Image (cartoon, rainbow, N blue to C red; front, side, top):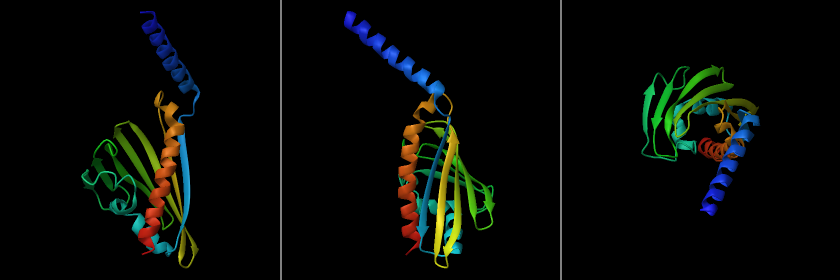
Length: 176
């Protein structure tokens, strides 16, 4: 009986400590990734602004080939939305193109409902590096409410790895 009480008290102390730490951790995450693609800016931008193309290069989109998607609006334009529902790795949510600036920037808001509820923004900046090279900067940012904010360092590492894989996939697709 004393062992059970001791184990219970230790668990309560650990949970309490984690919740207290969560009060003082940052609430925003920010991950940046950069890659050079051997393709002209126009080709890169025209391809990347189409959210439906993410099925070919975005690591997260490839996680569940049986996911359900609903499209609203015209792809590649502000206001286009992809609502998705998939397995536990994909979850439930939607992505919306919220801003396009010339052939330089695409801003996408991602609203997740399951397995966690949070909103994030993906910003893709493109810049002509040379006639046949384009620099692509991916920025993933968002906020997480307490107590989920305690997991931000873990999420930042996970997002960085996913962005690395996705950008290499994008490079392969566009350099064919």
